[in-house]
Length: 192
Image (tube, rainbow, N blue to C red; front, top):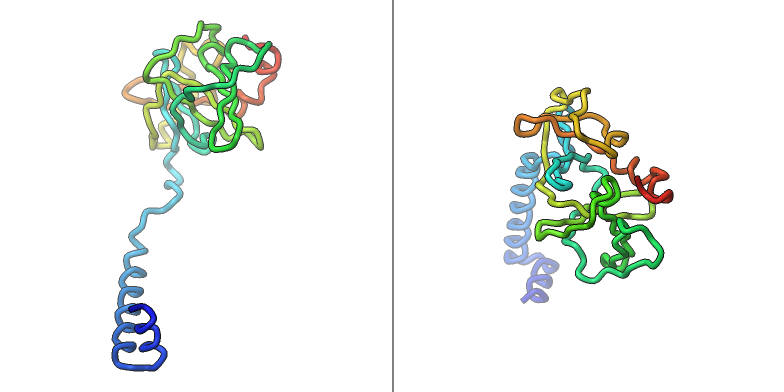
């Protein structure tokens, strides 16, 4: 069928002209619809981030710093002689992804794993890193003008990595700079 249609188009038959006309009509229709596609970039007055929890405390992180959200790996390869917050290394589609328990790293908490645990894979140069969090709630589009300069209380060891805050569900939620957290010497110095 395709070969005979291709021959008809080349031969200039009416069947070929009809087929060419249909293709041109489809092309024009799809091009007219393309102006209604959403912009890839959010408007300048909107801040986009990911809302997640560590324990019961909510946090935000800029969406640009997060590569993906993963389910915790069932089989992590432990690294002997490391701190308890470094849970191990997972194979994420052929890339080794170190997995850090954020609660254990920042608060010295004993790792307690829940069914809601998820791994936030952070864009950190050439070396990606996974942060185990209690739950990823989802993406939030927030008015940039609503940004708060005062940080919420109770951030503890995460306070140096908090840039600002946004009101979410009526309470201020800190925005964490995950890239700064992963670049901090605390990861090589053994945590807080």
